[in-house]
Image 1 (cartoon, rainbow, N blue to C red):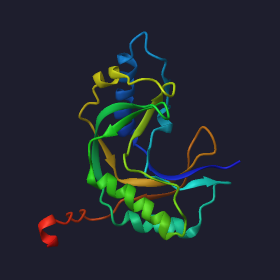
Image 2: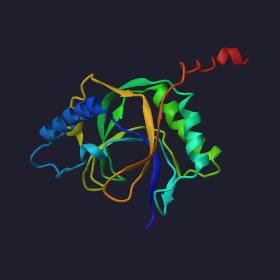
Image 3: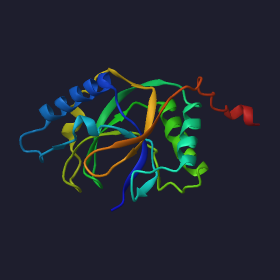
Image 4: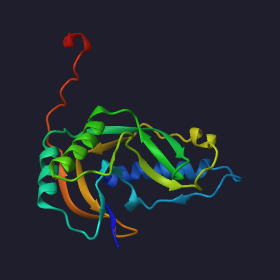
Length: 194
């Protein structure tokens, strides 16, 4: 049976406390007539950086591990805050979206590029990093009550990432890398291109 293989950021104990507060607020904000929530456990909270694909077992090619190690040297540790909660109809997921963070997106992009450098065609690029907190039924109409949930201003420290394998119901780490990069380079200015 094949299972998911992907690089991801998982929160520290402090980060889990921040997410637990938001999860509690989510539960309190749910109207009594709203669809029931299927909450994710704290050990399941993560941000998928990209999706490698399905694997027959918990084994990763050395080239992939080396590529992730190199990617970690290019991205600095950084902090993110949560901006809001949204419901995604196609999956039924209730997700916490971080405020825009160039370093987090650069980590997603570097992970995707690392998979390609290892000679693997990644199945999916992450263009909107998120933490899945719960699930509702798929295909529901918009859930405006989610807009009332205060995500707070607490920060989540993103200082490492892992390669995770999902054998079903849990995530096993096949490797972990601290972020050791310097500041991200400034994006090119449009006027400098001409």
